[in-house]
Image (cartoon, rainbow, N blue to C red; front, side):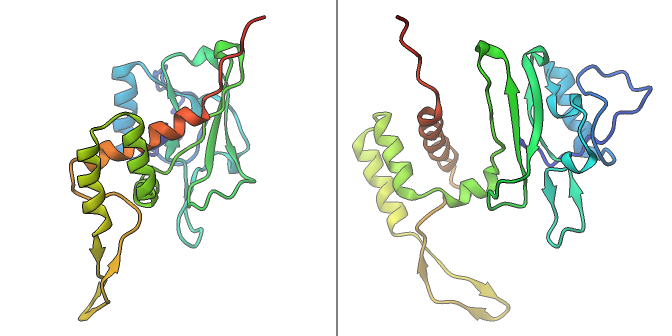
Length: 205
């Protein structure tokens, strides 16, 4: 699930592709074609496209100023028979130009809801203390954690606009772009969030 930045559009009536349904908006673009090829190769259903909604309930992203609205966030699954519904949550402000996508599943005989995550913004906004706390919880050697803390605690930046340059300021959140270890640290922090959100198993009497 997530922002694929791909528009699959509305399925053509003569299009024979079981991995996408008949519902959607807009016109398919090149990235949409690539997403469909990916789903076909990996036997993944685009769940958003199998549930009929009013037209305003399809779009998931709005351009600045609201001139354009596209459906570019999708939830994929290997078994669409477990999916009861995929829809947009419109009454929740998530501080993003994307709208939250949720899915209800009958797997495990419990309703399952999953929300869209804007990973690009999440990657830039994660607090540093959360990263280091997550690393310690999975028992990363304290020496390595201390090295990373030292690197991040002394990170600074400046803003350049034309010939003007701002004063140096500290960076207190976000991962260092281009650093190969950054995605791993981000994934670790997200894993801790997912673990906290998972329902606990009920004790059988």
